[in-house]
Image (cartoon, rainbow, N blue to C red; front, side, top):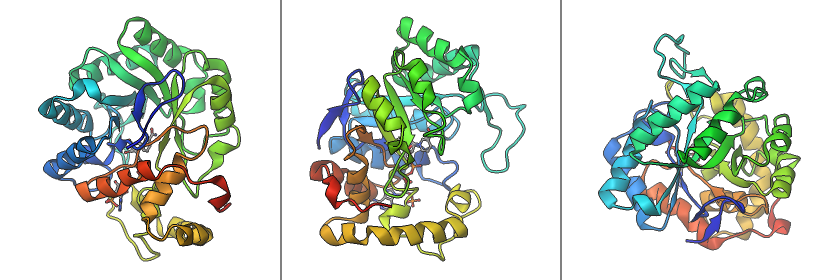
Amino acid sequence: MKYTKIGPRGPLVSTIGFGAWAIGGMNWGKTDDNVSKNALRKAIENGVTFIDTADVYGFGHSETLIREVLEEMDVKDKIVVATKAGNDFYNTNNEDDERYGPIRQNADYDYIISAAEKSLKRLNVETLDILQLHSPDTGKLQRDEPWRALEKLKQDGKIKHAGWSVQSFGETTQAFLLDEHRDLLDVIQVRYNLLEREAEKVLFKKSEEYGIGVIVRIPLLFGFLTGKFDKNTKFDTEDHRSMNLSPDKLKMYLKQLNKMKPLYEQYPDQTKAQLALRFCISHPATHVAIPGAKTEQQVLDNIAASDYGFIPYVNIPKI
Ligand SMILES: NC(=O)c1ccc[n+]([C@@H]2O[C@H](COP(=O)([O-])OP(=O)(O)OC[C@H]3O[C@@H](n4cnc5c(N)ncnc54)[C@H](OP(=O)(O)O)[C@@H]3O)[C@@H](O)[C@H]2O)c1
């Protein structure tokens, strides 16, 4: 396993981390907590030192499982946990969204502070390693409230590092916010993978210039880039991929995937997951990829990408 700092001001972590959305047990179909905990344990035993989660994943369940595993393994001080706030699932009066339940975006100062306090309790720590604003709309980010909340939490020692998870498909339109918050932000989290490279256009240039670390999410395009789905793949209605990898989207992605053939031919001994992950950590602006994993087998497949290291840019097909 290789290690790097998440940018000049970020913590030192393994270049492949563990994305803990799916193990929350919601939005990805049913999961078994024992299987999930074994997957996380396997990751840590094999050198993973970075976990990405959010308070909203499984409505607190992902954070709770992480705390249990870290305490059972007695490794709390060795593992960096990044969490997020900004999707209010606490307020049961919220209208029930068909797919995501009673969640409402809330980037108000008081809300972010109170959500951070709840994550501190759930993770049973004095300080959160990284707190990221959880992909708010641009309008909410143009107010100073969420940023002031991060600043205050940092001043009070409740968070070590301030982060922001950029909205999917807002990689360019939201990039101007880095100009305004470059001094506060230590890290950002970005959707980026072999088929979705919008972040390269503006966001990565700014993050490099400002010394802000980059965490890469959805590196496997929700599992698609492992090569296991085809045009006939169907997901359960409670799996978000019934929408995000709908038959139309699968058709489009499968067409784009043909361009990656030369890459797969160059590295026949590596899995498609490993090549997808190596790509994500090869850009000079990026630092760590956080594949979601549900099983020990997936973890072992994914983490091997760290040792394989960068893919030379000339070997990466354009899209
Ligand atoms: N707005 C935000 O801030 C935001 C949004 C999305 C994600 N995230 C973060 O980013 C992390 C990663 O993104 P993601 O989990 O959405 O997508 P992803 O990492 O691209 O895909 C993860 C899924 O792919 C499948 N998989 C993983 N490794 C595999 C392997 N080696 N072989 C075969 N299948 C494999 C698993 O699902 P199956 O086994 O069910 O196929 C797994 O749940 C999340 O866990 C979360 O921490 C943040």
